[in-house]
Length: 419
Image 1 (cartoon, rainbow, N blue to C red):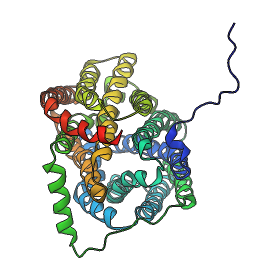
Image 2: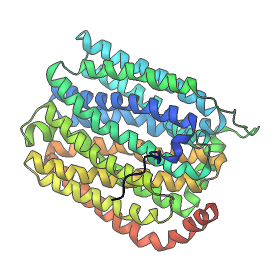
Image 3: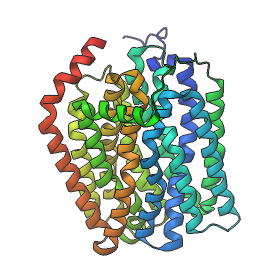
Image 4: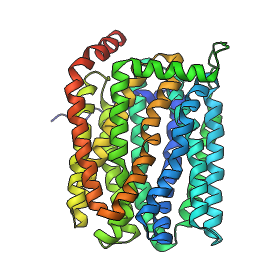
């Protein structure tokens, strides 16, 4: 009988061998749970205050419209400034925003306009935080070959938090109210700020240039949309974000009116999507390289679209939870997979600008989808609104698949040089 070899040590992911990345990973793992708790609590609180699907869309719009406006400039300054310091600053500001929301909720002075204003402020912070966070990863991963795994691990902690945060938030809201979710979120930022301050990062050499920000912004757009693989991935993400991700603002409607539940139901729905997303992220982190990832990105919107189709037709909680798994799987493969491909092919001096454009394709486009979905659900109902979004996602997958043969040669030629 073969006994297990006790001399063999458990293998940790290669990317976690980098000290700075371990700190980043640990801090984010704690902070993101609080962020997802706030998302659930804010959506529930808005619906409780207004009983309006349109207002759910309006708040989603207010939280992300500043991201659309400011993200391109966030990318320009991320390439120009110290990315580590930018991220520390944005995390401190985000903590203040969450604690302000908690204070208003705990004192009973919260109203829909305070939520809209603070959501707008958070969106403005995210415009600088997102590009800095994405562009910092290559600086804190010691081995270039570990970059793809590090990006996938980032997706895994986001989606682990997306699994834990909503489930915990649903239970906490039902027992104590939404205000404590905001408080826990605010305090959770201490972990990521401490981790960032503990990092030892060599200052990045910044090129001295007299180029104006608007000109650098134009250069970033010309580079991103002039290179076919980047353009195609960005446009696919934008389409899915507009049509598919708008279902998130309608979840309180499904939880209460369709499934006849409460805040626990809302938390379980978001956690189910998070579970699927977490599984997809773990799968991506186990891949050795980004080669062949383009095929997965092509089918990901169809997986998400089929999940949304089932969700729009479901009238039972157990089936809704099952199909939400596929929604999470599809979107994470698209978003994280696209991120991996872009990070491994983009030129470093344009990384911040390209990642800001990529982030804008999600955070910048989603608010318009939220606003349209909220208004459309008022007239035709939430299920029919999600049904339309599911069809658009499936069509997007078909269009991208048709373009795929022309993209493979360009992407793979770069990846093969890096092997």
